[in-house]
Length: 481
Ligand code: 6PG
Image (cartoon, rainbow, N blue to C red; front, side, top):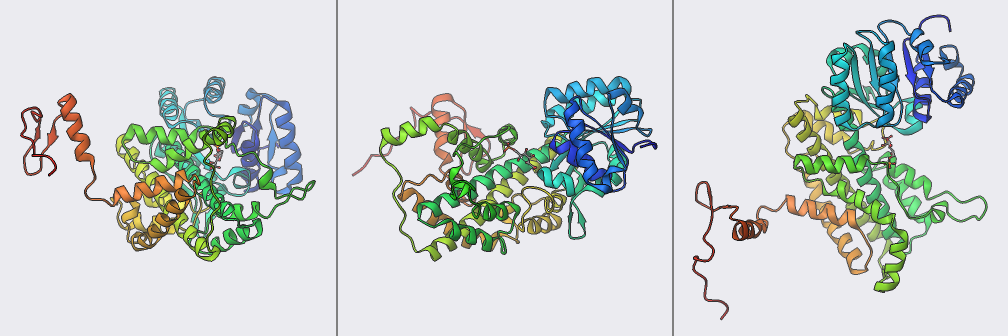
C-alpha cells in the first residue's frame, strides 16, 4: 500500500480484525497493528480472502511504522480489551501523535474511564472518542451499531468513515453522536444491560417450556414463529436456530450438552451499578446479572437441590395456551428491560449534561446490534414525539398492549411459582411493572420506621414540610375487638 492510510486500527483480535476488514471493504485505506505477530498474520490471511479489502489494508511491523503510515491529521481506532490495555495503548501512542490527531476507543470501556481519558487527551491537544460497538464479529465485519461519545469536532472528523461501515436499518444509519466524553460508552453499557435482561428472559421462557415437556422441535418452531411478529429480534432469531442444532457425535440437541453456568465480562454489572448510583430503578437489569452469578454456582446448586428436597414439579399445561401466555409474558418483560435501560440513559444524560437523544437510540439499536428488535420502532417514535417521556411503559405505542401482556405475565409467574420453577427475571419484571403502576405503595410504613428509630422525619398528608413524630407520645388505637 503506497498511499497514506485514512485510519489505523490497533488491536487485531476478532473485533479489531473484523472492523479493519469492514473499513477497507468500504474503500478506505487502513493500516493495522498488533503487538502479537500471529494476530497480524491472521489479519493478512483474512484480507487475502476478501479482494475488496486486500488492496487497501496493510499491517505495520511496529507502532512507529503504523503511525508513519497515517494521513495527517491522523485517526486511530483502538480495539484492545477494556481497562489497563487502553491506558497502555494510549501511553504508547501519544508520543507518536501530534496535536489535532484523533483516537477512537472502540472497546467496551467503562464510561468513567472514557471521561477521564477524554480530559487527558484534550489536555494534550488530541481528540478522543469513546465508541460503543455492538454486533459481535458478524456485525463488525458487515455493519455494527455505533454509539459515539466525544466532542462534536471529533465526531465530525470521523463521521463519514463510521457512517460508511455502520449497519443500516432501512434508510437509517445505525450511528449517532450521543454526547460528550463517556456518553457513547454509557449507552453501550446500558445496551449490554438490556441484552443481559433479554437473554435471561428468553432463557427462563425456554426453561418453562422445557419444564412443561415441549420438545426441541416445538420450542424452535415457537421462537421461529415469534420472530415473525411482535417479538421479532436478533436474540429470538438465534434462539430458534440454536434449538434446532444437534451435536454431530451424539445426535443430541447441542443446547442440552452445554453446562448451565452463565459467564459474563462485567458490562451488565456496570449498568446495574450505574442504576444504583443514579437512583434509577432497573431491577430487571440487575436481576439478570444476579441470575448469571447464581447460575455459575453449580456445585452449590447441586448440593441445595438434594438438601432442600423441593425440586420443581412438571408443569401440566395445554401447550397452545401456554405458548400464547409465554409470548405475552416475554413481550411485557422485554418492555420492562428497555424501559429501565432508557430511564437509566435519561438519568445519566441529565447528570453528565450529555445531549443524548433517546429517539435516536431507537434508531441506532435497530440494526447491527445484539438487542435489535421490532420494539425499537415504538421507542423511536415515542421519544421522537415526547423527549421528556418519564417511562416507556407510559408511551402510547405500548400502554394498551402492556395491559393485556401483563395479565399473561402474571399467569406465567404464578404458574412457575406454583411448580417451583425459578423465574427471577420474569418475576422481577412483573414486580417492577406492578410497583410502577401502583399509586399507593406501602412505603409509608418504611418512612414511619425510619422516623421511629432514627428521627428521619416524614411527610404527612395535608401538611407542609417534613415532621418528626414523637412516636412514644402519639395516642394508640384501642386494638382489636
Ligand atoms: C455486543 C455485545 C458484546 C459483549 C458480549 C459479551 O453488543 O456486541 O454486547 O459487546 O461483549 O455480548 O458480553 P458478556 O460476556 O458480558 O456476556
